[in-house]
Image 1 (tube, rainbow, N blue to C red):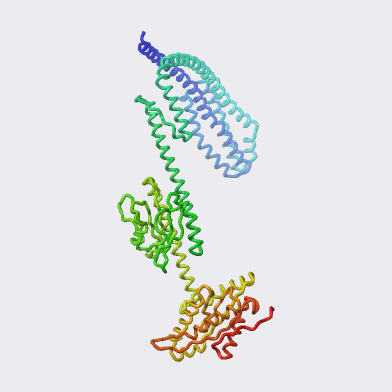
Image 2 (spheres, rainbow, N blue to C red; image 1 turned 45 degrees about the vertical axis):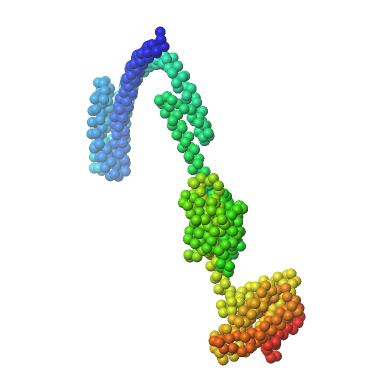
Length: 598
């Protein structure tokens, strides 16, 4: 016989055996249902009869409580319990409908009879107690006859339950035996059916299911371990196995996409953490040098594929000067005019090469095919710097777009920090510089003098101090007005600043009084510089409103460390010399008197 014929006969036999097995299982199930019904009936009887015995004992307790204590709450509870006995009797009346036989009901009626007798005695005892005869009431409720009647009630209920137990046990035993027989027959049928079914399906399971499933199982195991290099086999069958293979392919593609998104998320978290740390460090910078150091350290970590430079605007030269660079950029000048960059001209990011054709910046030289990014650093509409980047060759558009977001955030943070530093410098200059002469004021002098004096004493290096007071300055104000006096002060401040250059520090202490600190100057060097300043001051000619103001002279007091004592006392010794110079006729330089070490 052909294999297909054998398979068809086997399938027919399998179906027949399955039907027979199903019938036997249904029969076994019905027998088990009978067993459960008998047990359920027993539970119903127990529930209905248990209430009777409990109520008898509760009524007795309430009645006895009232007789003993006289508390009316026991009487109220008794009446309430007694009123509810009717529902108990009704439930007992339904026992016959639930399947109780005549003998069982007779036993239960006898118990109810004794219970009614008990309630009559309880009523008699309660009436006696209410009339004041508590002794008779106690004799009724606590007498031997009352106890025997309670025992009779319990005995009749126990007899009823015993009869129910006997009948239920017999019914359960019969149902259990029948269910075991039908269950055994069902198991035999199922075994024969399963054996035949396995023999028929062996070839299909092995050829059509087992081998593909084994291959798919290996792929699923690797995918479960997040090894997405595992490629599901191609299943040409249009069936559940093919659907499973397709689902596994979709799962693999989703896993690869999830891995890519997780990598991007991790990179994004790292970049945002670096940006946060960069912002914190930038906020702690005291000057531009600190900011440049922070940028040089963090930017290569945030943009590892983008070489670049940081330019800061130099107002004195009107140029963008390179402050630092990273990752060795190959293009762009180190210094150029702001007009040479289109980003600075337009006030927004400029990319000459990309999806849109644009004009290259002049600071790139003649190269017009470079992939570069120029991001201006602005503060209140003014360009204060520039971030220049060179895009990596061959980078994907998605990578460039994602990196562009970080670059913009980077530029925003650096621009804000640079703007804050510039504002801080302006405020510091306003606080430390005399607005009339442009020289440092008394506050900056005190700070610098303390530091220079400590360094001189610590390193045993010379330090000279020259006090200057313009002679007869009040005359200029009185004869020519305060504007003329201001002109004199500006001219003297400019002369001092020009005379010192890099060799010292000039300050305006207030009014017409100035001081010059010369670190590293010995007494002789300081005398020569004081004579030079005096000579230039004598040659100074100042005009106001087109009129000359006359010659300007000054008195000078000079002191030096270590020649005139401690470094921190130079101001006092120089001031004493200045007072002597004014007392001896002004327009002269006097050196302080040598003091003791004490």
